[in-house]
Image 1: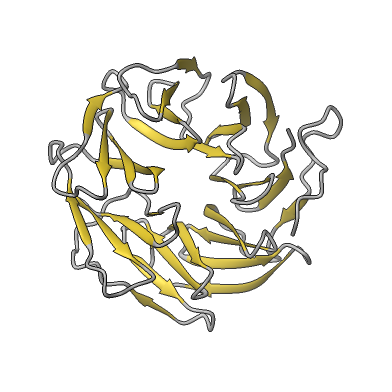
Image 2: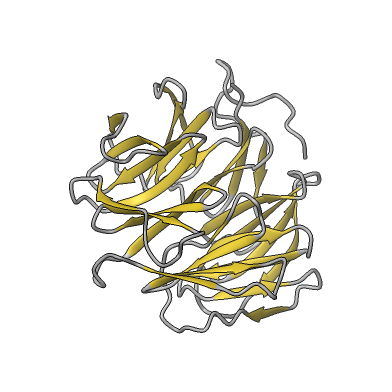
Length: 312
């Protein structure tokens, strides 16, 4: 489904979604969203471990897969070339789902997983899988490439919360203590940078918008940093609620932030870092938010899914 230029951000009907998705029966809280196939489809994962694939042209669930691992789905990554979906549950386990809806567990040579979500690098050639004490970099296009392991330089009690790519060859790690670590993938034996950037407040979410990084923390602050310097934030924004989710539009022009228990979502302009406006979700909570990777489409979920076209 291509962006059709209606919906937000305009003065009229600004809270009316372009699409509203729900099942006829057993709608459960959705924790993972991903637009795929040029926005013609959407993948969602719920708290019961059910993976749903939605056809956005007909606005219906076209496929539903019960993963049967008794754990919520928190992240999916779609490999378009191989037509494989990588599925991560809350235990940190990774499963592969093929185009015939068969699935199997991916062996990551470790049993101690992290709750941080896996990410695919911008080149879309490698996926980083967080584990309790290290990251595992796996090339998904060439099995002959050796996996690369990076051990965390922080205390063992300091839990990894988020991983975000800075560019094609480096990633940012955010920890419960407020520490951030930069890892150059070309030099896996040591980290490039480490600093506590949040005055010891736990990091909840991190997202990159071109040359800036947005970090939300438990002290109800949003801190925006230059991608190349984390010594001091460019701007600190006080939020009325603790922000636990951040999503950036594909062109990096706007950022949306939300809190699970609050139905208001705030929109910021990334160039000026100014607040634009707040729009209200249709439900009682916001369990997941996600921009498309290629358009203005933006999805938010509870036990149903709303999709807006967020214009400039």
